[in-house]
Length: 268
Image (cartoon, rainbow, N blue to C red; front, side, top):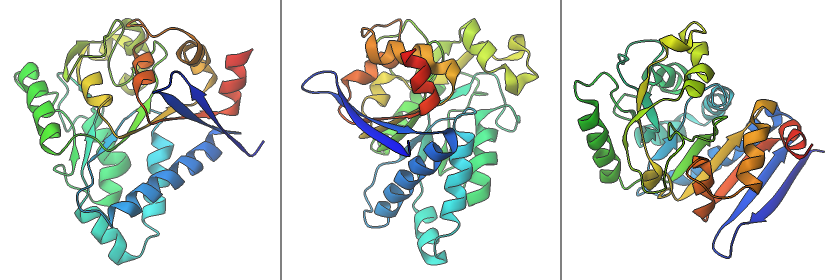
């Protein structure tokens, strides 16, 4: 199967476009096609909203492919794009310095900001090392709103159903805030902390569903058989605070990107 596109209707108001590719590599290339097209449109529209970006292992090959694609643009087009670049990340650990290689700030510099020579003012993240993280969350929300909110948003899916760091239980009206990370999430993210879950920070600053559901366009990326169970719950279960990603079913413009193995595992 080269590719498959289908539409899943949750209600008259909400439907998702499901993009299936035979493997992760094909999925990444197809998604980058869409991202590149959106970025090219930005050259024609000076009022475009910022991008919303995520981190984690799912996003690494996406950023690698995207930067490679952008570096093939003509110098003039690339310069215009980068000059107007504005993005806001979903989250950051509390208590981790910006320069710490385990921070999401460092992750974004390593995988996107550095290769494209973007400034910290262009690639926005919460300051997890702020003296008052609760104030920082409010300031980050205010800064995002001052830029008009998110246009295109990239999301991953946690195995407990979180997006961003919106851990269950979580309602749809939560905004940018400090959250406590679950043991499962800390275990999932331990790869960046010497595979020691107890070394993963216990709190983070995250955008909430108020900001997420206000995005114009959402691309949810689900790769790997370990995500099959939560994907099944997301597509076939009920909307619940115990599955935060289920609130995305209220959004009118969601594209779900999934590899064939994960989709087949979900249906078995």
